[in-house]
Length: 253
Length: 178
Image (tube, rainbow over all chains, first blue to last red; front, side):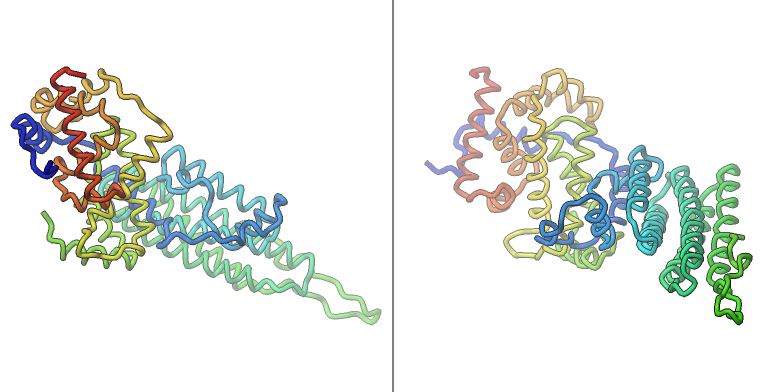
């Protein structure tokens, strides 16, 4: 029997039917929009997880801190690729906040915040590639401003606390993060300006203008933190003891 | 239809993390992949989600794709789609109800043509998933036996046998014999 040839006429009619089946509609652009946004968080290729995972001791915070410290992606994959404005987007942000909270080291917390903000910047860039969805884009700008303000404040506070605990402490890592946050604020500003150009609704324009103002202020705050002098110490008195100047650098602008 | 050379050019760009190029690849193949999924699952939201999953997997694994004379990029993409479909099928084991198929006319690009095909889709939906897949790949997607074999992970002989059985079974169902 030659399986390649269909001798029965009925089979030939059936094959013609199968070939001429009509096609179905779907939300092609929406899926594309979601996909392009998700691509922002997907490196190529997927990092390979080796037995390193299984050799680490499984106790709570230390293990989680190691995972976060080497920058591995979240286990909640679907939330991680959520769009700004989606229900899962809030879950993704909550997840990022949790990650920052459970990490014990202030330096790593600061770096994580900068990493999350970098993801916001990439999301904004991806959103700017896609047409329409203006409300979502404006929401994304709002979110990025909130995140930046929060990050700059928490990094500044962490730097000051470290300096107050130990005047000789090295805050270079915090300065690196602040510098990065300053650059990220500039990137976010550029994307926000681009999105503002697409928006014709006056209310949405007003929102973006407010966000742009806050982004400029965030950049200035980061710059001021970087340029702030270190906590001053009074010279040693005759008894050999020193004292810290309580008024210097202990309050945020 | 886009030239295979242009597609390979887009793939190279996408492998260099050019997301716009990947977006163009999506534009070229999304319709076929979606209809491949929809032909089996008949649920718009699920198929849109799976379509997203398929292309996300393609992006993540794009650096592992190597062009071969015997297999086009579409073959590789359909392989991902097929495995994604099988994984989904295993987990959900959806039993398609007849009224679900009847209500799908609202999603048809041509509702009139849909009415003419409703009987066929009802019969196809009662076939085993592998039979449905081979019929879709060979006739609706117009793939060669070699391409279908690559996608389904079977030999060319196995594909020919499966195809023959699928046609026979479908014909018997339409004739009301089973």
